[in-house]
Image (cartoon, rainbow, N blue to C red):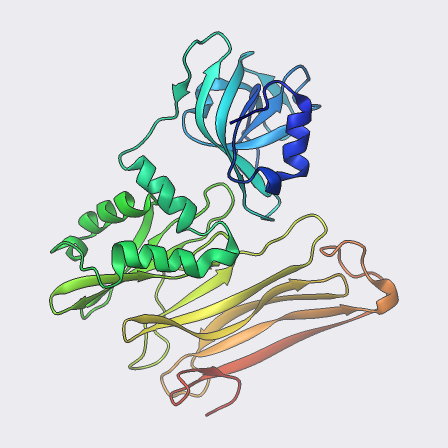
Length: 367
């Protein structure tokens, strides 16, 4: 174990080189700040000792029971001292990459103690905690490059070709308990097809404190037994599903709309997409996608979607509309999310996408 105790340089080293510490267990001493007014990121941070909280280097923390050790609260403007509790935390550095207006790393706290304590207090473990942490670390895909490996792991281990215990997916309460035990994430909603051979549970968020992304886990009944699957895209970087099913095409579906969780920051390019999926033959298939938002400094696009029966055949088409703005090259913004200034072109657009039964997807022309 690296002993980084009571050195401000260790805070700085972790902040500057989180990838070098990724997966390593470290020990740090400081005071915990609770961000009551924080909109993005994790609410708890460890501030280096010996400095006022607004001047100290800080590292985000994840874990339970941290509130009992808080020294300061911060409402976005004012720091309030609750207690002067210098603590030593032991945990593992998690470098998750760029996320929405939050540091790309945090410490997953395993143990914590005050300096007057002789024994460290373990972070409270729920039933199946160790198994759940394995699932959260290796299945929920903090690393976007390992999403396929994560999906294979969870499907092979819990779902694919392994029938659930008889009756588990028949009742919502039993299914919630099963997923909570196996995946360690909260079931937000459950949707059942009218034919009772398809059940979709939306779990998440997959990265509490960073995103609100929900991911589907679906179950099909085959020969009286339930078999399940989930998506490789169920990660902090993947699309967040709207759990409301869409009935768009007669004899098809249901369809579900998802939006990417964009990787953004103060001055980085932004890009995110809409994705539309449908269930077919026991699989969730992408049948349409389009840009939701794009900001590169010279280009800015913001779109929305709605569904209407445009040609009167009873099916609902995708109406994709929004604004597209392009800055003149000499007026390129220095910050990607800054609005265009000076000479630029700006136009509104509307595109209609129709269901093509032969291709099994929505296309930008009448089939």
